[in-house]
Amino acid sequence: MKKNVFENADLAAQALARFVAGEIGKKNGLFYLAVSGGSTPARLFSLLTGSYRDVIDWEKIRLFWVDERCVPPGHGESNYGMTRETLLDHVAIPGENVFRMKGEEEPALESHRYGELIKRTVPLDEGIPVFDMVLLGMGDDGHTASVFPDQIHLMDSRKICEVAVHPVSGQKRITITGPVINKGRKVIFFLTGAGKKTMLEKIFQQDQSLPASLVQPESGGLYFFLDKAADPA
Ligand code: 6PG
Figure 1: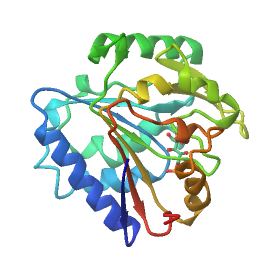
Figure 2: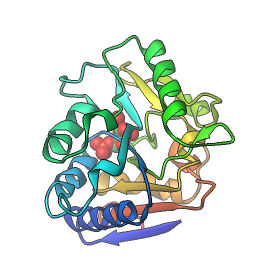
Figure 3: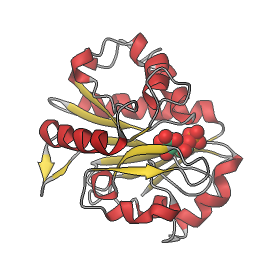
């Protein structure tokens, strides 16, 4: 595990943008990327559309989502909608290389469809898709992707995608599962703000009751990009 701590969220995002651009540039052939939603990634995506827009070969990227809220793409809570506004509308990634989780569809059907899509599109190892990079966040309750503590069994699901339920709002989510996350060549937590600190300390102490603690990529490629406020030090 490699922890990178920066003075503030902007500097952390800039360092992560540099790292992401570097990894994409190093890869020969297609780059399979899975991104999370929430508010933190928007800071990164905005940077990628700035000084990195003409650096990254967007046509080599196959873009997937780690999770999606079961809402239409135009809904304010859509992870796809956030990504479209902050990234996709500003870079030349061909539409056919963007694989949206369809939050507007019936969750169980979409979860199955998306899992089959990933299996057909992303290289497999032992039947499990291998993403070059998985970008993760972490909720204040220790969830990651949309695997919440009360559904932690999804971290060892035999399926590629599952339907999850937000424990407070009851909102349904589609999420990739633990085995898919842990096949990622590089799995990156991008966490900023003091709200993450207490939970992150538990993650670093390997509290097995928390989904984010169970992110242990087989590749060993686990990275944390943090600002000082989020770092338990
Ligand atoms: C989602 C995300 C989720 C997110 C955390 C942290 O759909 O909400 O995929 O796992 O990473 O909730 O969200 P913030 O970045 O907003 O803190």
